[in-house]
Image (cartoon, rainbow, N blue to C red):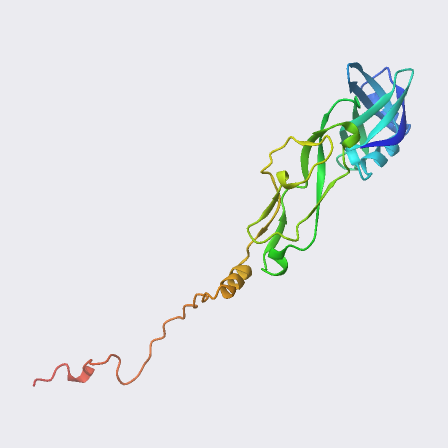
Length: 230
């Protein structure tokens, strides 16, 4: 989704680890801009401004304007980024120039809402398997997210990528059978289903108990009569 945001960038002539450390110490990070028929250029940007974009509601799907001193700017999108493995600070950004008249592929989050029938009534378990689907559309048609009501899902039913409604220039490029979420049965839900259908639950096996008494076995002769003659 395109936002009215402009990020200022400065061209950088030198590269390498030492240069990157110097930039970060000065409150900047190295970045690269490429694509849309232009040469790749090395720039520096503010990590705070880039973090605001990455943590916004549209995240890395945000299309914003990049203003580069001494070079042509225009709409771009973040396609890759790197964080420090320990501190979590932003270390590097890759951006791609965007042609607003051409379709692009993006991954969009899918949010679910509602209490599935399979959970609320049948006692099943709701599981979220995948959180996004891949679509192709014009840059201006990229949605923040998709929302789907899962209230009607029963045990054994699922929400798949092909079930998510698309609009405008959107086209699903991933597998339509990709499971987004489903409701599965549990031991308790199986017993509930059996009761509702009028089936008897299997009886629990009880351990055998040896009964001691005067007669150990019906018709058996007493131990003392074994040696007597008739």
